Structure formats: C-alpha cells, structure tokens
Length: 305
Figure 1 (cartoon, rainbow, N blue to C red):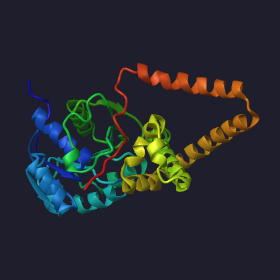
Figure 2 (cartoon, rainbow, N blue to C red):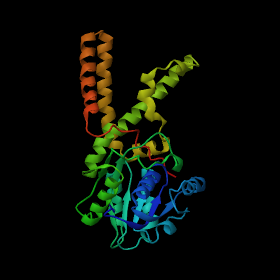
Figure 3 (cartoon, rainbow, N blue to C red):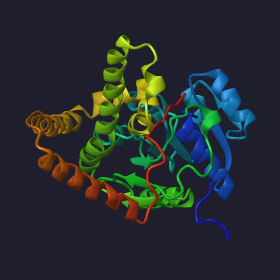
Figure 4 (cartoon, rainbow, N blue to C red):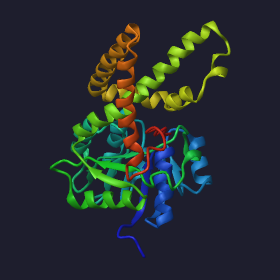
C-alpha cells in the first residue's frame, strides 16, 4: 500500500546517525525520490553516498536545499539556527522544514520567523539514538517503537504538521505533540540531567583512579550500565547544556538535594531510611519495564556532520 506522503527531493543537513537513519527509513518506505546530503565532513558525505543513504552531497547549504520539498536539519542544536539562516533564501514555496534537536524552545522561537512566505517549519525531536556517530552508524529501524515529539505553535501550518507527523509514523515512531517549553522541561529532567550525571560520575571515578592505574578493570556492570551514555558526543551535549541550561540547572539542584539527603542517611547509618529510599526508587524505575513502548535504545545522540 502506497504511503500518503511523498517528496520528490529531500535535503538532509547533517547526515549523521539521526539524519542518515531517517533517510534510510524514508527510502525503505518509498517516501522520496532523491536525497541530497549537506554536511561539514566530505569523508562522512562520501560514506553516506557509498552506503546508499543519499544520492548527492554538498558542503553548501544553499545548493543542497534548492528545489527540496522537505528539509530535515539534523545538526547539533547550536548550529541548527545558522543552518536554516543559510538555507532560508533558497527554499521554494511549499517546502517543509523540520529539525531533530533535543532542545525545542529556542529553536522554534527563532526558526519560525525565518521561514519565507509559503515555507513551513515544524519542530521535531525523535527520542532515539545510540552512542555511535556518523553516517556509518545509521540504520532504518532506529526510530521504531520510540517517541518523536512535535512542538507546533499556534502559527504552525496544519497540513505541514500532519505531513511531518506522518513522516515519523512511517519511520516507526510514536508521535506526541506538546508545547516546546514543556518538552524542554521534561527532557531536561529525563535525558539532559542523566547525561550530565553520567559524565560527572565517570570523571569522579577517573580522579579516584589516579590511585590505582587499573581501576576500570575492576568496574562491574553497574558502572558500565549507569555511565553508558557518557560515550555520547561531548560537542552535542555541551551545546544542549548551553541551550537548555535553566531546566538542566533546575534538575541539578533537585538532584543535589536528593544526594545530600542520601549522604545524611549513610552518615547516620540509617539502613531503614536507605532501604526506604532505594525501594521507592526501584518501584518507580520498575514501572518503565511495563510501558507499552520500547525503552530508549540510547541517548539522544545526534552526532551529525
């Protein structure tokens, strides 16, 4: 059965894990004609073409987006606005522009006014990823069973919103619509804060490790499981912290309070109190195993070129 949507030309700015995977998903479902890749790294773009992810490539945004029916901006969040600024004057009427950034408030606020007459922007965030980066890490099934959050405003074109919703559904995602600020608060606590904690936990162990050169050789599964996301792109996550700092700082303050409370229980030798805290956490964490959607396969690691 043919899909309800089809794009003659798609331009993907940032053919990394996310950009490459949505390209492959679109190809698999027959949603597009040709795909043009735009990026900084020639080596990565050559890989993307060799792997059949894109048909053509360029480092020039204006060339890549010319005549595109759909432009997907999948670069690190701080570079998203600049990429769209470069593209804006070259977008044809009827073109839909969407992104894949994990911070939405600032991006939506700044990108909507950049759209030329007859060009439509829809904010999006596919909540999926792995620790791997680059076009070589892309695969068509990345979004299957995961959420994609759309963050329209009162000014968002309804047909464009429906098209982007259908795009992510075709890629296998469960689509949720919410306000951009609500998105940033939720992701600040559930995704951005855990990454900050994971990076710091690794650094804390590394500092202790100065007393024993082979400390990682003794690390158990708990350390590996709780710090897996610290293998994500440092560039991407430093930019996310810059764009979503208020909600991340709010999360850090709350975490510090919980950590201080735990510290006091341990100092007091209050095993009953510790057991109560651990039990509460376990019960809440165990509810994740009963959700109807699959758990997050990895961090929101967009790792784009």
